[in-house]
Image (tube, rainbow over all chains, first blue to last red; front, side, top):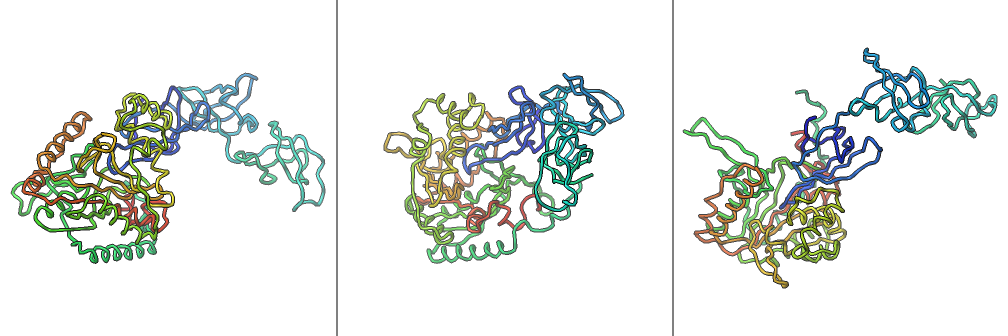
Length: 188
Length: 326
C-alpha cells in the first residue's frame, strides 16, 4: 500500500497504526508562530471500534490500510460465521465472524443489503442500512383505536432485537426501524 | 476540476467585515497618537525567511521590462524590509502587512493573513509588552494581564524543566500526553509539542498572558541573554488570550555578523531536514552592518485579534474569503 503524509490526511482515509487498520476521523494542524508543526489526529480503530488520539510531526507518514467497503447481501449463518455475498456481480461469498458482525447481528435479515468492510480481503465490520423493515414475532396484544398517542411497550422482532413500539402494534406487523438508534419509525 | 459554486459567498459575515474596519481604524488611531509612522513595504522579496519551520511561497516576475526573470519570495512577515527602514532612520514604524505561510491551514491559520507589525527604537521588551497590552486592552476590552516565564509554565503544568530535565524524560512525557512516537524528537521538538498541546490551551483563560524567556534555541531574530538560573534565553515574548497565540515580540538582534551566522545556521538545519535552502537577505545584513538603532518589535496576528473580538471560532469567520474560496 501507498504511504500517506500528514498533509494528505483527511476524514475517511484508511491507514495502519500499531498493526491495526484505522479510519481517520479528524486531522487538526497545530503550528506555533515559531517552531515545529504537528498534526493532532483522531482515528477509529476498525478492529476494535475504539477512537484513538495521536499526534504526529507534520510531514510524517503512515502506511495505507487495505480496507474496502462493499455492499453485500446477507445469506445465512451456520452458527459460527455469517455469510455475505458481493452484489457487484462476482457472487463472492465472505464469512464474517462474531467480532466482525458485532451489534449488527440483531439487524441481520436475509436478502437485505449491508455494508461489509474488508481488511486484507476479510470482513472486519458489518454496518446495517440506516432503516430496515422487520416483522414483529412477539408483543402484547394491540389496543384498537389507539393510533395517536400514549404509552409504548416492548416488541421482539424476527431478528431477536427488542424495540419500544406504540401500543397498537400487533404480532405479524412489519415495522420500519432506525438501526442507528434502535427506534421504531413507523409501520411499513 | 469542478468547483462548488456556492463558495462564491464570503466566508465572513458582512457584520464581521464591518467590525474589521472599525478595529483597523482603532489601530490606526492608536499608532497615530503614539507617533508611530504607518509604512508600506513590498510583499515580494529576493530573499525569504530561512526559518526551517516556515515555508515561503514563491513567485516569478518575468518578461516586459526585465532582461532576466526574477524569482521572488512572498514574505512570511514584513520584518526584513521594516528593519531596513529602521536602519535608514525611519524611527518608530508600523504596518498591517499581508503575509504568506505555505501550507498553514487550520481553524486558526490561513496561508495568506494580515500581520500587524511594529518597531520601537529605544524600547526594551518590557516597554513593548506594555504597549502591546495597551493596544489589546483597547481593542478587546480586557484589563487583566499576567506574565510568566517559559520555564515556570513547564514546572507548573508539567513538573519538568525545559532547560534542565533529561531529554528522555521530555520524550516520555511527550509520548504520554499526545501519543507521538517520541524517540526521535529533540529537546526543541518536545518543548514545542508540550507547549502547544498541554500548556497553550490553558493560557489566557480570562486574562492576557505574556510568556517570556524562551530557550535560546528558539530565539529566531531576538537577542539572547542569560536568565536568573544561568541558562541562555531569548529576549522574546509571546502573548496569549483564550489559548490563542496572538503576538510574538523580540528585543531585536542588531549584530550583523550574528544575523548572518543565524541565517547560515538555519540553512544548515534546512539541509539536514531535507528542505530547500532559502536565499539569505544580504540587504538586511548590510543594513544591520550600517547600524540599526537598538529596538524592540512585535508581530501580532490581526485576523486572530479580530476572531477574539468577534467571539468567532474560526479565522475564516473574520477573513472576507478564506483560502478555500479565494
